[in-house]
Image (cartoon, rainbow, N blue to C red; front, side, top):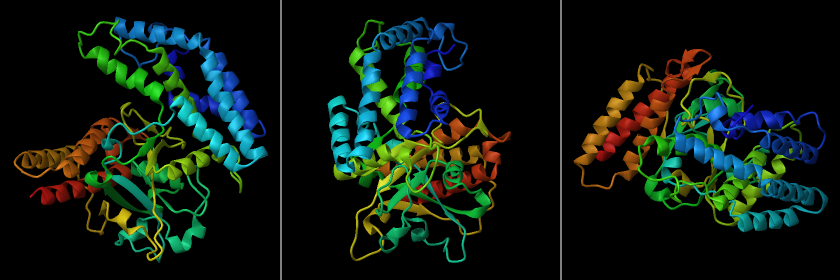
Length: 423
């Protein structure tokens, strides 16, 4: 039997969605997903009675999650509502028009407060990776070779989950493994570059974040709170379950799951892309600059990573059309770019990079400049290295793999540039 931590995990929700495969028409798979979702909800057990490792053995934590479970079991109407509303919007797209469906989706998003902003620029102000398949015409020393599809070649814009037909966008992955998975190519067939968003430029930018907020709360946030030795009492409203917050979190989680529904048949028209593409078009229309979303690819070959590891997160940044240039040059200039020149030895260890980061941090303390542009990315990268230190890819320590070694090489380039800029 599963507890709330097991049930709301991305892995379990993906299994639940995949179990709906074999059913023709996406609308029927949505119905099946809803039925299975609700059936499992009523069978969930207390976290204290579950053997899953994703918990903390604290009485307050058990009490909080028990109250959460009780609320969820007795308020399934809100779960049914969001499923039915998204089902109706999909049908409206199929039966009537994209315009009618988009209007209804935006009304739903606003009525239920389903927009998820990035809580901090640290969510995306870190080293992000781009990949291109190696070809004779690709110039690996030119950042534009890795940038978005040129405006004069927009006919190459493919049908992607979070995309708009004919509109070039800039897609990044949080890890090189992520890039391999998304492009469906081994690293040996790819040229890789890294880009760092300039914090000062991106600060305050409207970036939407589609994430499993229920799972993050149950497994990532609450254990830290209850293990911190805080003297807050359980009846403190800041740590007690709040019915309005729980309802919103569950509805946002369901929206995220449906927007990331696995594809059963990828042809000219992809049913599972209707809602995420509508969602993307609305973000562009209402002046969002981009979107963070989890990868839907299979990462079973990666094991023993820390639960805070965000190696499978994708970022898409929207471009602004330019009639004079083939690229959004303002966007390009808002990034620091890092390229490989062939001289790399791939000899760095994680400890080497952390030592370099610590050196940069010490020098930054003596600087009179505001170095958030430099230091925040170092903090994010240092955490990434620590979280991935125990990970194994196909049984090999991640930073001993080609993917991990290349990432460390890029991190070294980042650190050296930061040291130079701080000086």
